[in-house]
Image 1: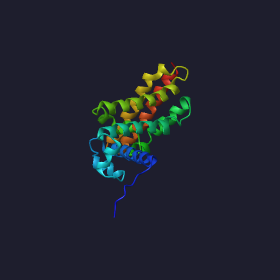
Image 2: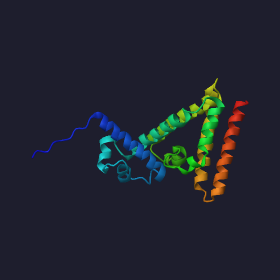
Image 3: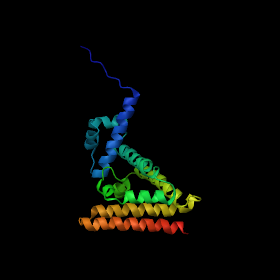
Image 4: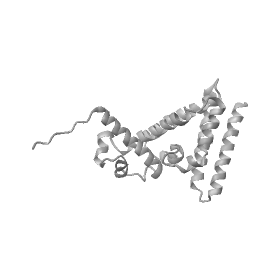
Length: 200
């Protein structure tokens, strides 16, 4: 009997690619870039290792794409959904410094989960991250200084760094009480930073 090749429609290929990107993003945040091999990344998507190359040129290509997707999702699901002005920034900050966000590494912030590794990654991955970070900080800046967002861009970048660093440190501490207190202090520091900017 003659074997028939199965041809999938374009939308199937697109859906499969999106599934690989989404599952890779979660795995990278959980286990890190170096700790996530091709076999694991593809198994998470329910595919074989070799299938990677039907969708991406290399693991680095997948990593850069997954980082860009994680940053886009954070902007769309958190920043873009927040209210305008200070109220929106407060919403973002309270979510970011919550114990739920800190403890849910897989579904939490890609900044806090991957920054150290992104700094040592390929230029393509770093560029994907940079573009995503700039989108996030533009969302912050528009709320910090609604009439002149460019003036608040550096302050917004500083805010993002403060937020990510605080959550990274809180995740690293074995003393749960201290880790929780650090989140509370981080939230107060971030709110003080935005209040200082808005009173300038």
